[in-house]
Length: 136
Ligand SMILES: [Zn+2]
Image (cartoon, rainbow, N blue to C red; front, side, top):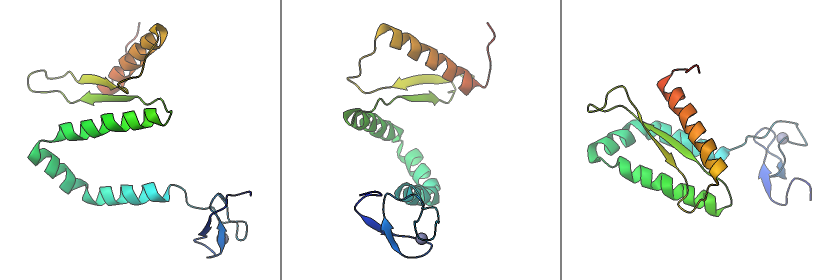
């Protein structure tokens, strides 16, 4: 059936419509998308300062990085090709230079050409983080 088999309520006209509809067939009001993500983002935004102070106080940034690595594995298991580029802020020991790290699923295999492309992506990302443009 077009539009899916499950139904939801249109926020504009309160009629039951199929979940797959992006526009209400009755009132032609666009349906909100990513409602679940928006709720989670709003909740995080409201608690961001407490969350950050807790992370800083307990020094558990590594736990968040572990969660990110686990998320990459989950995305890989779903058949996606995840890649996460991180730039760490400069430290007192090494000021002016950001440490870069590329996160990929543990079992992801790269061909030689893919590895070359990834090196180029990493170099471009490094330039983006530094806010500089290099001319060759
Ligand atoms: Zn409607």
